[in-house]
Length: 138
Image (cartoon, rainbow, N blue to C red; front, side):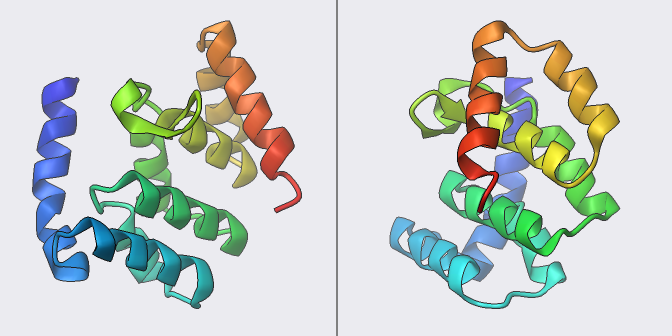
């Protein structure tokens, strides 16, 4: 699985160079752009492949806000549900995987959410529920 993740990140470096010039400061700028501007669905789909946790997190938040449901978004969210390693931390115990699981539920992919949620460890379940409780009014 680690090799698959590395391959995904390597492939998406091309997108990072196009959108961000490959610098951390540019990633932060892109995350801010996603937060404050009205970006297109196509842009959001592309931003889901940027190899930066902050950009992906902000993109997912915008996708939830705009209630975007399509095969590209769905596939990426399912893929990201496996990103539970500490290198994918968003904040505290919350990792990209938890956030993707939360997003599946918010976007109405309830069957997939329930299957994945039921197979989580108790601590991971608590983290997903914490996300839901803290971001529900967003």
